Length: 412
Image: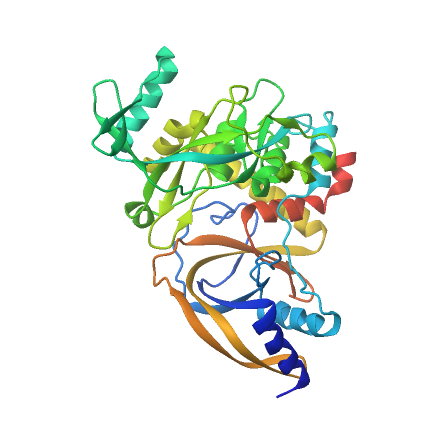
């Protein structure tokens, strides 16, 4: 065994955890303009490739990498041996410079000039929705007559929210499913609808879509609403969450973005509780992104009853073509794949020779079978060399990375 192997195996006992993730991937497809396959299109591809990914973290979980390829893992281990620091590969999700470009250049387009605020929130109560249709109806009635349609009742030790006809709509859960989150609130110019909940990962995509003139409803459908297949929806729980939050902090400089995590939500009269929804997979413990309360009825109606919408179809092609154009200017192409997480194992021992991983021993931690959700991920490829510049990016990360390449056009 090499000195490097001995050194790394010693670190794994004292201060480091190495995890092995296995995924099933589809073959990558390169996106081209005006084709059937877009950033958002529904695809049914075979997941025929088994791929290993790795994650490095401190034993106290205070520092961790993203889930990375074997080549990045080998690079990390070599750097770790040379510097005694755990390198962290972090793919771009929120690009503060890009966000501020959009906010502070109102002459450029519809997206720039938006008022952007951030806040933190935490859930205090969670309910499992028992009847989705009753929930949708109650929320629609509340919008029409501005009167609360859901009231709490107790039966023995159980708490329910019922509608005004005393139908049980949801039942309280005795453990919280969602925790502390950093979120954004976007007020677009020109009387567009507000975005009450935007994750940091999606913020650049939302602002860029506004800049292209995409209407708010279609942005929510394409970027913010959860995407699940019929099979996945059949086995999930719909969770209704009561949340406390901080006040809204206006984003006007980088420190406003970087410092938000230091503010804890307050349960007081100045910040009344809000209610959000999300889907939960009990077999894999996955959560979707939050659906803002004002959007729950329209989001669920869209997710459950998708219909062909020519305007939405045109907008998804517009966004796809725009990213392809930016990538092409920088001699890059964009690939899309589907993947599903299969297992997680903990690596207990590794062997390294000539800076390459030659073998490892691992212990299975979790076998998900086929229970995890299928997700789209994106790769950025250099056209001349075919080298991967970025890989496994979420759609939010892709927007943040590609649009940031085009900074000069944002300043014109």
